[in-house]
Image (cartoon, rainbow over all chains, first blue to last red; front, side):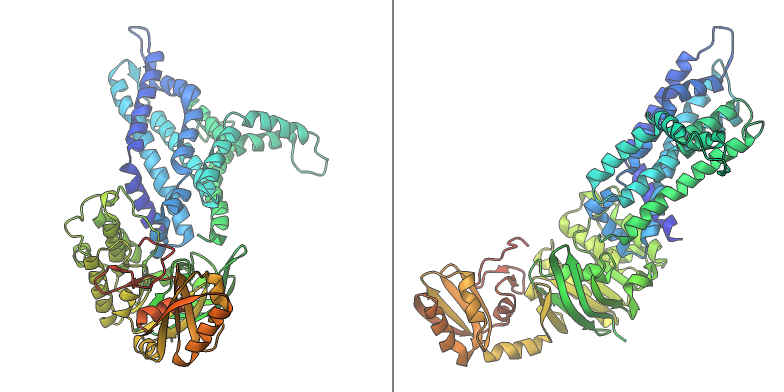
Length: 269
Length: 325
């Protein structure tokens, strides 16, 4: 499994870099800040989920995609600029091994920072006036890691397709604005544009709306975490919608690097 | 059966033709020196062997497989020292070798490889702190992993001191003794001369000559070098000289014109230059050395390096455009 060898090397390389330690510290600080704001009145106990909900509202959905794009936008272009890509491709790795190995290695590295950054403070919180629902807390942490991995996959795919480092960076910034602040607006516009579908199209405008909503990994993720906190993860009324959200995340995880690879395959290095 | 076979290969980058209708065959077990000045198309050719770059026309086969369709498995049988590469600065030298071992799925001993390329002492340091020469040794070590059938080395001596360049040659010879084919490029004749069974000289994307070192020497023996001191001459003035029968090359450096030619062509050369309005102040004749032959094939764009590694300013050698090396 050649891509696994590439993934392991990329992971080992990434965890030696200072950004990973820095990010872990940032996550610990942000969770601690959320805990401070969500702290209960003396004598009362609050679920640790409240911290996560606060954290979710105030930084996870906006910050995690940004961090993922920043750590991964140069995954391929950076190696091409420095020349280490030549060393990598001189060994028996295909370009596909490189792209998917990078997605796996960098996702694993970023997920390590996220899991450490979320779980370390939880241990401290559990001793304090918080009740920890371990299942929900871990589930949430893993969903954050999945969200991060999806944006890593998008960034690596873009990095493989981009002809230069500058375009890779510009594209990553563009993708961030597309998916995070502007999506609602774009979704609304698209929905209005296709609001009146002809009768023969077997889609209701509600389906189209859901599809557009879920096409954005950030909203697919927030749908899933909402259900998780409501105790209805992959069950209850929205079960099929959640399943679509999860499928959409997995789709991005594979499709974005694949499209990048198709362009990367054709390019002279 | 051949180790490398290029058939009518052309590579264009936009309007620039980097390699033009190149036919080249490297036989199994030989050491082939791919010689030419910087910018002649050597790296482009090597990049096509590795499928980094795809030919505009023609076919490229390595170990009897077309590289474009062979996939990554082909590189399990090849060791590569690429040009213009960089190491992973946060990983140690040993990690790099281990990575190559895992990638090729072999069970070599990393220490043995590190020892061979002289990096045993520095093995556990981050490669980011390595000098250019050490990085070169590290990449060579990665290329040696798995006893490859074919070694492709792009400018292997760059960044190495004379001692390092000598060790590099010894490693190349040892690999050839083991039965490996070695294909290496250089813009320095001295490095190629000492070890190669056969040499190909590439100039402006075309193979201008291909022969054994002995064959080249025999050529150079029948040639003479005419060294003319003139009032003033430009490279354009030499076009007519190069077109003469019996002239294999000409170069100008300030007021010195160097022409490699058969003895019978000397008077033609002198009259052609006079006809172009160039005043000839002094004439000297020498028998041509191998170095001069190389320079003549590449219109003076080459670096002649004597054994031991000093960049040789042969007395009448034109300045080299690449300068550094």
